[in-house]
Image 1: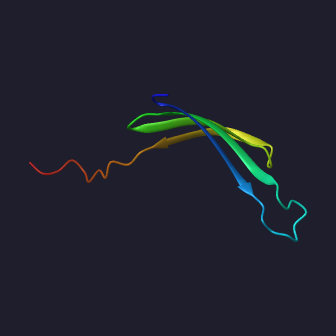
Image 2: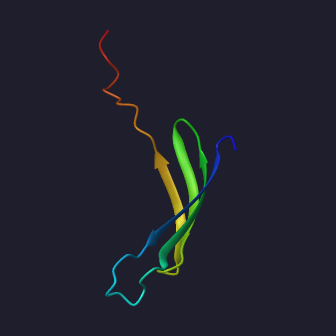
Length: 68
């Protein structure tokens, strides 16, 4: 909805020899505010039981101030 983005990602296990066969694992939830110049967000990873804050400044291929 505008610059507010909700994201969910997961992995589905297809390994027949795994104890987690046919299960969704590594669930990650993220809520972020995206602008042209930056992205600010919070996340939580269920498997690692960890969360945090992300801040990213987007590159505009700045090559210096130029010449006169």
